[in-house]
Amino acid sequence: MDKIKPKLLYVITQGQWGGAQKYVYDLSLALREEFEIIVAVGEPNDKPDLQNRLKKANLSYIQLRHLRRAISPWHDLLAIFELRGLYRKLKPSIVHLNSSKAGILGSIATYKLQATSYKLLYTVHGWVFNEPLSLAKKKLYKLLEKITARAKSQIIVLSESEKQAGLKLGIPEKKITTVPLGVGQIENNLSKTDARRMTLNLWAEEPPNFNTSYLIGTIANFYPTKNLDNLIKAVSKIKNKLGNFYIILIGDGPEKENLKSKIKNQNLDNFVCMPGFIENAAKYLPAFDVFVLPSRKEGLPYTLLEAQNAQTPIIATDVGAVNTIVSDKKTGLLAPPEDVDKLAQAIEYAYHHPAEMQKMAQLASAQNSPKYSKSTMILETVKLYRNMRTN
Image 1 (cartoon, rainbow, N blue to C red):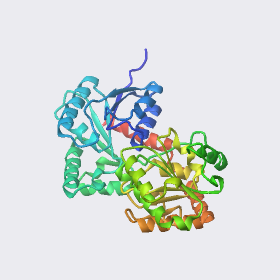
Image 2: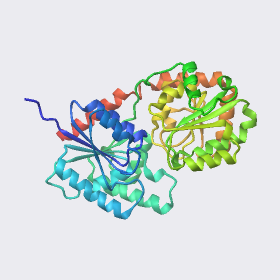
Image 3: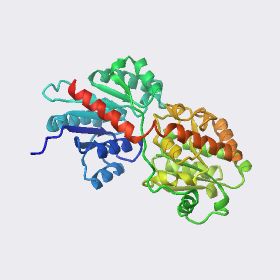
């Protein structure tokens, strides 16, 4: 007779592929032998990237009707009751909430559900109150995170800085555990030459002198927090100093048309390629001479870890836990968020010092690969699950 597996319910606000979705998928795939995995995904009208991968892997998922990324009092209230009904129906041993919206509403949904054996775990993929929001919204999110923390058995943060932010809210230290994200080897890892050849195929028509050009790249969802328009502004400031260069922006999202407009306004149309969302986009990283992440808010970005694994030089803004994986002028270059001039200076420096940037990339790969491995992340998370079930 087969042993009954404990139920593990993941709740995530949306399915469009990004760091949180990769995190849930990696854990689900790794833990399917020990747990009965069910993933509840919100944003019903969004791109079902996570759902498609779960289906392909024969993992169960439930499409939530009312959990949305944007604030919507009506849908938010209905999402609480929808999640509450799900907890009652499934009776999971552990509910693992991901992203701020799921974390807050998923906690409220447990109110007075004594009949249901639930242990609540919440992974903070970057505190939402660190996003560029109005003061009123920041205060509201801080209050909601503080109040709903009472219902949570454990909170996972991705870095020491995120832990300190949680402690400042008044969340007890015993509830907060730091478990950094981890990545495995890049699928279909390519040489620089092969990656370049593959990247060339993304362009509608072959750009002049592409094989000898300097390629600036990024992989990101096109959200305001990723601040990709600042990358365009920064390159525009120094384009006459860079000679032969191109930019490739891999991703998709609501900022796409705005980005296209900025690119046109800065007269960079012939220098930028936007191929859209690409599955397993990390395989293109070896093609880039530099990977740039100009975000105004991050937790601990998967893309930087993947770039380090690929030994691709990095320029990033100093936000969230970025400075725990990129040490300025040692393993990459850091610029202050929103400072276009400093970002432009960093890109110009990288362009003129490729050998030095490559040495930084090699050092970053050697230092961080063991610490930020997928296997370590999974082992530490499972340890938490087991402790929660026995306590």
